Length: 322
Ligand code: ADP
Ligand code: MG
Image: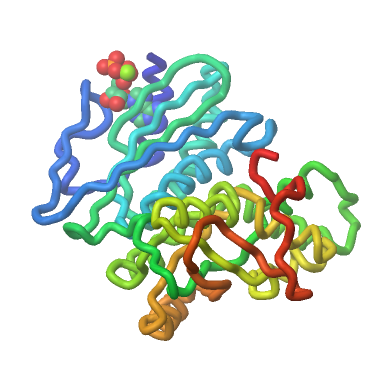
């Protein structure tokens, strides 16, 4: 359906790759796997009003729909190659599709990712992207390898996307001297940068890895569950941007950093003897990296507050679905 829209998407996302034998236009794409690599695949769906606010710019939606998927590949230590796009649109809106395709292409092109097919249907705005990436045999990072004594680290800063959503929901005046801080946080929400180089550098180094889509507590919790361990983290060590800290009090900034979703940073664990090397490797890539705690016996994630006491994790707000 909507041949013109598909042609528009094809042209705007064009990315020649030798391993794409047949891309957009036939009944299925035909792709050649590189010898001696494993395939990592992931799919994520964004629904308007659920995963991004109504009124988000088309280019931001296009970027983010791909970014959240590339972040999953980053968390596996995989290098992206191909994508499929299922687009459900309320109307055949060429301007929207142009903006969407441009935002998608802006992120796809530096990674040489080819959009090789998809589906276009009519309905409430909803975008599914499936990505395919390569990883050397048995080298994929998983959530399951964390061991007692490993350090827990994160890339970048935490809580910015949640603060960006808060900023969108609390409009400010253009002449507010802190507008630029809000713009920075909204950019972090709308244009997350998947940590692909960091993920690739962590292959063979990290014992476990996950990307932070649902918030640090939830996603580190997934590592703990999969690995059969617990984690203790220190609130004072959590990396937070100056924009977040300037616009919010300590308790709110901590809440966003622990429970806010959509940051798409990596959370990973590293055996103590490799810690210094890993930190140096990521710093060399220009990727901020911070040790925030350690893996312990037991289960679940505990957070030590700045006063030295454990935070009460039952309190509403710390739980993702509370
Ligand atoms: P079919 O009915 O055979 O599934 P479609 O009309 O749905 O064909 O799609 C035609 C071609 O366009 C296919 O190669 C399909 O993969 C591609 N395509 C359709 N929608 C999209 C999209 N949103 N993004 C990328 N490729 C698409
Ligand atoms: Mg189809």
